Length: 296
Image 1 (cartoon, rainbow, N blue to C red):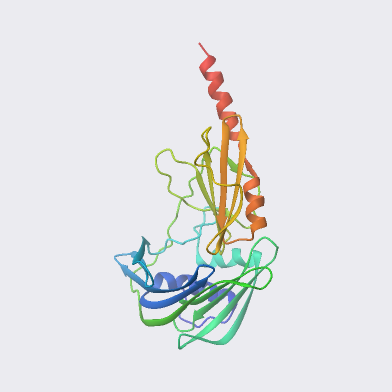
Image 2 (cartoon, one colour):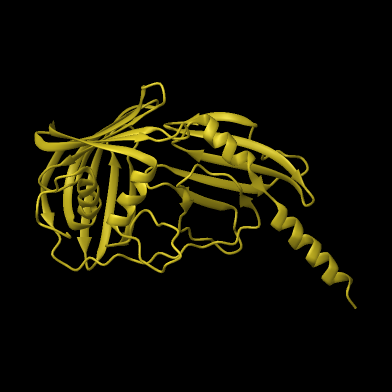
């Protein structure tokens, strides 16, 4: 990590927490509490040959495991930056503090380990509050609580047992993740601070975009609807676990479209985002193609 000294401010702990997720291998047990219910999890985080392997195994009900692999140093959040500078934990922390008031509370304790608590209060009405508890020794996230605008807890994720974290001794380089743009539609309104995130398109499938402010993430899906609309989702708002979903249908010169926004954000935020989707670029392309076809 950038420094061996104990952090003394909320900003320094933010940086320490992000570095820690790239610097330690560990096994853990955890519990997740949300509107779906209570679930117990087994967590595994390994680092080998510069690759992070994260495995989450659900211990209740049917056996389900989720595995993710990524290079050490590839941050989960990428900012829009025209200066050519790489994303970094310091830049991530600075970005967050523009849109959340971050307070530090010492002398916490989680899963038998000394911890510090970080409280993120949004500076506007478009996002939720977050609370983090970071392990004082390693900086690893021990607990995360998501809180709505009425002060109600939406979700609690907490490690209940953390087994001897092992520090990674290899080189950690911040990876330059390229943002892929080019969807034939545009989102014209987002809460301040939300920026486009990298996403891999499959073939010609350019129906999704992802945006994040560094804490909250929203995914946008846009797809054409057939004339019978048998695949259409019902317009309105739905709850999918801790995430809300806003669904709208619209017409353009190219036909009928379904637009979906999903994320851990207030419903009014998702509705405003999805209603801001603009098809002007798609219509311009169709007009250009039509003119090209008419040329001899």
